[in-house]
Amino acid sequence: MKIFTITIATIILTSFSLMKNSNNTMNNSIYDIEISSLEGESIDLANFKGKKILFVNVASKCGFTPQYEKLQELHNQYGEKVAIIGVPCNQFGGQEPGSAAEIKEFCSKNYGVSFLMTEKCDVKGNNQHKLYKWLTKKSENGVEDSNVGWNFQKYLVDENGKLIKVFKSGVNPLDDSITKLL
Image 1: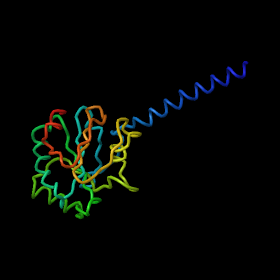
Image 2: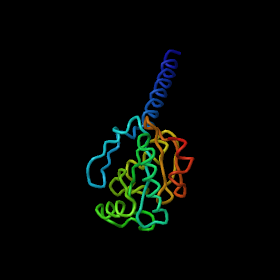
Image 3: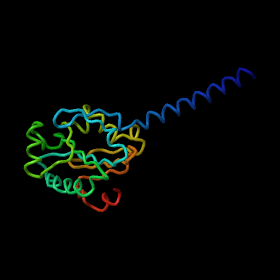
Image 4: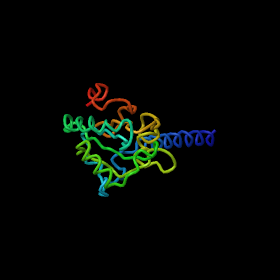
């Protein structure tokens, strides 16, 4: 009976330990993810604690590219509440083929973009950037699984680094479904 009791206690303690480790894995912090700016400088996402972040995979030759204008308006109107971070990606129809310098020039010249832009990244597939692993996998963000369907999909993260909501490409950045959450 003593061996049976010890075995049950061991199983219970092991289960609690696994649950605790599982919860720690599930709630990885977005603030620990390393990513570089379009200019190649390290971005410390921890600098955005206390502010919402809207991550948007962007492209220069897409039907949704005019959303850059609305993203800039969102940045201008709500910049004290939310950081807009554009993430160039060339995985959807080869619609972001340019170099970092070409992307920067295009965005500045055509849309006056002044919000933060990251390096070009893969947002899906085998080379998916850690940022997008966090944004798209419940095991990382603790909220939900999602797939990036196309350019200009949006991920809103709250002031404490928790995923709030995913918005499909066709959602205008100034739509009430976004602004009411800011």
